[in-house]
Length: 570
Image (cartoon, rainbow, N blue to C red; front, side, top):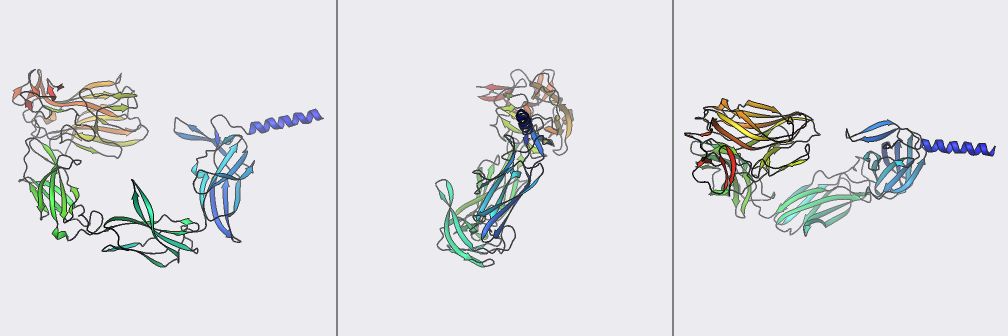
């Protein structure tokens, strides 16, 4: 009999051990429907937690980047309830439920807790395997007590160096229940201590009543910007506060409105409107007393050249005639007695004669958004990408760092392989003179990836009116036998004889199997049996052109076009 009992106990232990094990790579799911409520019982704070034990297990699938789920293949060993004083990390075990049933609804009361915010985390064990400790569905925050709702009617008034902030104490808590706890109101100001802003308490009013109107008055506030916060609190905690930025004293003018540039027969007409507010939201004086400065610049990132000052009118005409096609932006800044205020930037305008052939783009302009030709424009249909210039680019699909085909720069459009999207991204040349071209051809080098095809296409498109573009060539990417640079040539016959034609390089995405697009050494030229035809002359081995397509008699140090190829002369 004793031996039989020992055998039965052994088999029971083995069965229990087996039931408490999960297959390798699997873990129990966390609890569901976790919720907590606070109540005041006999002068004590009680928090009631409720949740449902899991009935499934999960395993992470790296191929789909998602979890696979199955019915829980073992009994639950225990469920632990842990509590933290509102920091979501330092949890302390407060309750253990031994051997709960799968899918069981469980309720637990955490009795006599202090006022304040409390974080709870629930962890499921099957043997030594636990549910995901960082599953936010298994965490909840419960407030023991009431916290006032946010202020919704804060008004600030600045008169001289006195700032008045007035508001109404809300009548409900953050859950929308009637507020019946004592409330304190605190005014603080953000003050920089070294490099970091720190809140400094300015004043506090205790035991304000729900629905009461409260005013804070700051006397002798220093000139300049001030960032105030009004917060309400009870013994249970404080709300997030209401922020108010005010400016004391005389302010600089804000940004002029509706800045616009339009090409006219005389040049570029720039128009704008007077600013509506100060640079920091303060008083900048009478708008009628402002004057204006106008700056001309080649891109939106530079400061620009001052071309007009002390203007009273809200318009200015820039009479400018560049020798080659050039893109301009204009900045307008209002000026008062304190000085010059915020700049407003106009749209871009393009002036000057069309570029001559050959037209070369080496993408050597320093990276980022700048191309060799300032008249190149970029456009896109989505928010994920657009063409950029860099001195190299890392290709995840090929695990290689692509260096320029020649020179120091290349152009790329980078996409995310794990997002399904449908969009196009393009860059467009400025106007090019094809009026005397016999056989215009566009060529460039493409870094293609050997990956068996993709959902990416690259198009070369042309337009003779700057508006309507048609396809000259369409390529499907990812077709190369080996990854590397390959030369692409496209006939631009549709632009033959055009006084102003444009070429657009357009990448198109439609699916998940997508790659980055990388190109270099774009050249648009009139080609015959001997090479490049310059307008009015025949190319020879000695003909040298700059990157704007202009023939030069003697090349100094820099990048030039010779025999249809980009060369670096030192």
